[in-house]
Image (cartoon, rainbow over all chains, first blue to last red; front, side, top):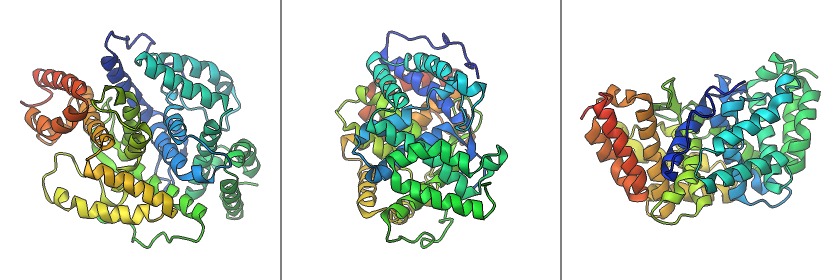
Amino acid sequence: MPPRRPASFVDVTDSPLDDALAFFLEIDRLKGVERRNFLADGSRRENTAEHSWHLGMAVMVFAQFANEPVDLATAIGMALVHDIVEIDAGDTFAYDQGADAASKEAREQAAADRLFGMLPPATGVHFRELWDRYERGECPESRLVMAVDRMAPMFLNMAEGGTTWREFGIGRKRVIDRNGRYVQAALPDVWTRAMSRLDAAVANGHIDE
Amino acid sequence: MPPRRPASFVDVTDSPLDDALAFFLEIDRLKGVERRNFLADGSRRENTAEHSWHLGMAVMVFAQFANEPVDLATAIGMALVHDIVEIDAGDTFAYDQGADAASKEAREQAAADRLFGMLPPATGVHFRELWDRYERGECPESRLVMAVDRMAPMFLNMAEGGTTWREFGIGRKRVIDRNGRYVQAALPDVWTRAMSRLDAAVANGHIDE
């Protein structure tokens, strides 16, 4: 999805506070980015802003079950910041293997340049570092955030009956292939619980084998 | 608004991880709590989960403009946690002075008991402390979160043209009376910017004097 506004729409000013306020209003648009999965009650699809809040909470709740220590402030900040690029780049479905997935990195890099570039420099560099660290996936904080980013839609899907998985023809094996390595690596006991619920969903006919 | 489920709906188990998972799915309901203000683009009203994400981001962006140092991890956690009680207690409009406002404290205390009581004990105590500290408003972190909690809907309202204020007959003076002491106390330069935009909104006829 191309940017909805040209990159020059918001000019950086000579006032750090005005830049911060412009960024604050710009990121409001994340509330309008729709994800594929539904809320736990099945009432509607989730948007990326509320998903990011849920991930920040998940970091605070599940860090105690992680298999390595994490710096909580870093991990929470990463959870809140890492999807902001979707304002320009859109959400790429975790199971997508087509053109969207192939162009994802370039679209998201351009989005990070534009959006974090709106901020006062020290803040922009800090957010860009959080985003880069998440993308690299090489530190304990990024491994935990990646795990909660994968477990969250899994548990929401299982809670509401697997609508999205059926809609896109995704069976048990693909769910495991796409999520297992992330969730199991950082939150092994959560993965065990996820597998029990996934098997129950197969038994109930909510998801294909 | 009464709780939508009896307090006994979710029983605490003898597994901290299962309790954490139950809490994680329970707080998904915050995405269904509607606030009065609209998004910046005027497309729909905001929900409390995405508002909480925006506040977490605001803490990270505006702490550098605060008039006292804050512990960032505490302030971000407070921003994410402090409105979770609205799952049972509903959102109370900042300008409400009727029965809802009068019963707000009792409803929110009961909600905090139930929701934070679902968690593994150490996590529940931590979240309850964040919530209590916010409610008391006596530490730098709570003053910053209160300020961003007031500035956020103000700037969203001003961005989309003041729909909510007109809808509820709220003029410039009431906006200042209800928000000034919080925003000005912690983020004085943000308040100066808010006042300029408010005066522009009055001049444009978007809000009454």
